[in-house]
Each structure stands twice: as structure tokens, then as C-alpha cells.
Image 1: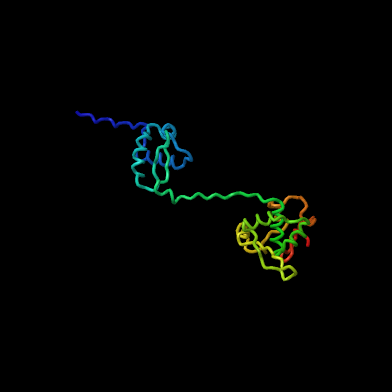
Image 2: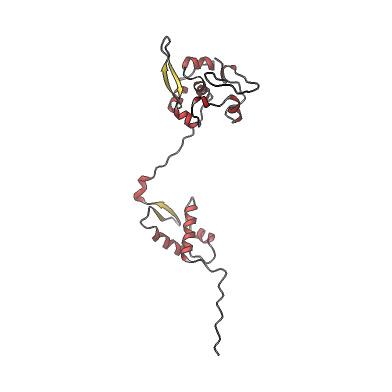
Length: 215
């Protein structure tokens, strides 16, 4: 009488199939901001895995693709194929903090446009430096408007579409009031130009007149 062999008990620590190990290595490398060493792969993957072999198969699978698996020192990482490097362009946004003078000038233009330099200085109570205006022009938040039909034909300033787009406004009529600006933390409790104070901070119509400044 022949006895049937007992089924072989599978190990609880049996490594996943190599194809699954490739997926694990691929996921780890894609998620990592820095190249990953073989030791780090071993530590992250389940017991019994062979990340070194998985790397060999993975490198072949990415051969000729837009992204390559490369060795960087003792570590591994995905990198853009060398012949496609010209397609990569890094764009950064330069954070530039406006001075209080620039903020006040910008606010006057926004709420009183079209407004001349002399009118800006009258509202602020101080002279407007050329640098302040140049900075706002360079940011493309204000632009030159029509000249006034008054002696000297002074040029006026108005806000641009870039200004409206930056602040999510459809038009200058959508500018927030004093209460909204302070609630959003865009204004502190220091006195504003022209000695304006709003004890109750009630919202008023901004059409043609600014609640921030006195003419």
C-alpha cells in the first residue's frame, strides 16, 4: 500500500514572486526623493526578497524608455533619459515681499484708478518714489493709463489683468472692503494713509470711491 505524500507546508515568510518584487522596488524608487541603497530596499521589502535581482530585471524593463533606472554611487534612482534632458524645464516662482509704500500705492491705484502720481502722493501724504512705481510696473500689477486732459497732461495708472488674475478678481469692482482685508490678515491695525479709520468697519460701495483712503 503506497502512502500519499503529505502536502508541503508553505513558509509564512516565502518571498513574493519576482514580478511583484519588481513592482515593490519600482514603487519605492518612484516615491523616494533621494536615491535608495540596496540595504534600504532590503530593509523595506518583505523577508526573503531579492531586490538586487529585481533591480536587474527592472533596469532591463526601462531600457529605451523616457525614464531610466540608474545607479548613483551605492544607490539607485529613476532619471530622465539623457537624450530627453532638453525637454525638462524647471520653473520657480520668486517670492517678492512688497514694501508698505508699494502696498499702499497699489491699493490707491486699485481703488482710485485711473489715478495720477500727484493724486497718489496727495492721498498717501508723502512722495512716491520712482522705485516703488517701477516695482509695481515690473510686476505687471499696474500699467500706464490715459493722460488726464489737464495742464501738463499727467499720465494715470490703472491695475492690470495680471493683478486681477493674481487675486482672483473679475474686475476692480470685486475688490474687497476694509473689513474683508483685515479679516484675511492683509491689513494690520496701523493707521492707513490719509488718516482713515473705520470703527465699525461696515462695508461700503467701492464704485468710484475707496473706503480705504480719503481724497
